[in-house]
Image (cartoon, rainbow, N blue to C red; front, side):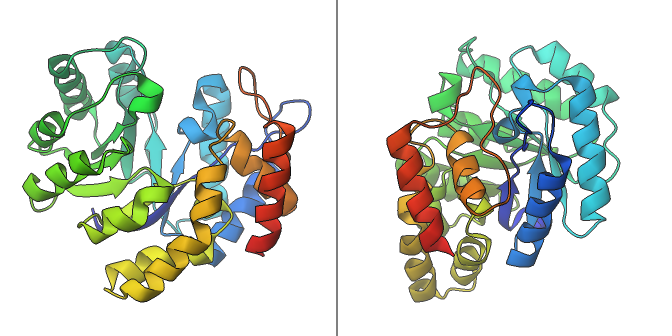
Length: 291
């Protein structure tokens, strides 16, 4: 899965004030990302507010992104949930033409044990006609996929990578040290991407890349080439914003920065809400410094 090496942007779903999808803004963001050096897109994932999209809206977004992208960058489709049978059914019925892989978040709220997580992902991997990427984000799901669990799942021929957003570098290093050769470890935490790359990771699925496509994607490429001085410089240029966008909810933070750049509105769908006033001011300050 060479398509997953580098920087993937977890695309937001821009909304109009009336909460309808802003397809023109989505087009602007896609073109800005491609021009900036992004390597691939993750579409209708959690950063795209997938829990508050209807099935019809998801399909419309996928069709529109395929049309605008026009085969220029690989597309990774977010398909996840905490009802294994429903996710399996979606994997079997979803039109995946033009999609390179599936990103699926670890089941949330139910808090399955590690054996349950293994059986969940095994069922998904067996059902999917595309390679599967694990997504471990305990701060959102309420449960951690341990290194041992991820390494066991890495043995499945249809599970090709993990998006690691545990924030636990010891866990990340344990996976990197013991993984199969072709299994990719992808950072799911913008602020930790540089150290994960230094330990052997091969990329990131990013939110901050919406605003810093040249700098952040350039940081990843510099690290992959072994130019650590350039990578470190870019890392620290982006670090403050990479942390700030999550201070009062995501994707509200990144939408605020994109709004300052004239690319989309700040609108999010309930239960999400725009960021508070102090975070808003700080993010707009950072957006001005970015350009």
